[in-house]
Picture 1: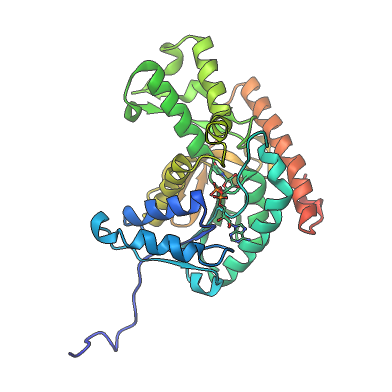
Picture 2: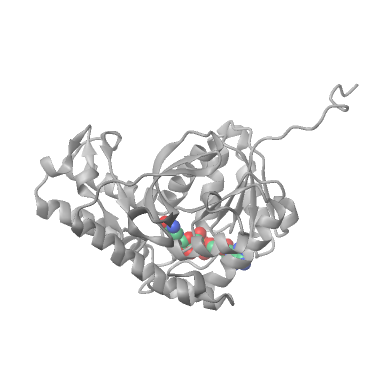
Length: 329
Ligand code: TXD
């Protein structure tokens, strides 16, 4: 048989590297592959783990009818030329542990992983998932040396999706009709914005009393902890993986979805030199645009309080990886 293509340059599908083949990483690999978004390279520090997960996932390829290749590896060279790198490596929260307790240990893991990954994929867009999210995203930006538009964090999509679910459950309407917006840092100080949440265009402030809204907002703020408490062995991963796959899709398909994303701020919302959750257009170049929505005085000061807590942790994390926090304002 003659291979007619031997003399032509090779072509390839988009490729997503996922660092960390734990719960979030492997579930994201499944979502990306089954949605036919890209080939997937799963990399983990534990030998055999990413290989086993990848083999298990690819053995369902025929049944799930997708064309994505999935490989597992412990070697960064196998991740070369990726279009997107998603970082999930690190430790998950244990019951009673706050996100910020994870700070020091995850800082080192994420910083090193980002350095190794960018060497192999200098043109990639990076999406960070590891907690504490806003801090780890800043560290990844520092570690990679990439333009800030190509480094972002996933949290707002998840927080918004949780609030969307709770509103739909409360009003007994389809989640498809509910849109929500949660800004700020991914933590207890996140800023759900009920004024910008609607059911088919009707603000929820017209549909629920203030006490009900506050209850749902509170449940959203504690959404991660609620699941940790139930599971007892680690944190949420189905909804986080779905949230990350939405961002991957918007970037790979250049959809310019408007999604709450941890993005680098340079004066927007009165904040500088910090990664924080704000509404962004995500396209093939990463964060294509940051939207500045009008905030009340109260909302704006809540956003600044959230930013302050991120800054405190950022100083500790930067020091943890041997960087002086001179640029942190
Ligand atoms: O909204 C969000 N951003 C989040 C964040 C939602 C859910 C989970 N969130 C955080 O993601 C969570 O607090 C953790 O920091 C990460 C990963 O959560 P996951 O539940 O996937 O944790 P696992 O199952 O413990 O998986 C972590 C994997 C595990 O397989 C380790 O062996 C691996 O990370 N790991 C590494 N891989 C590569 N390189 C290094 N150095 C490394 N160290 C650990």
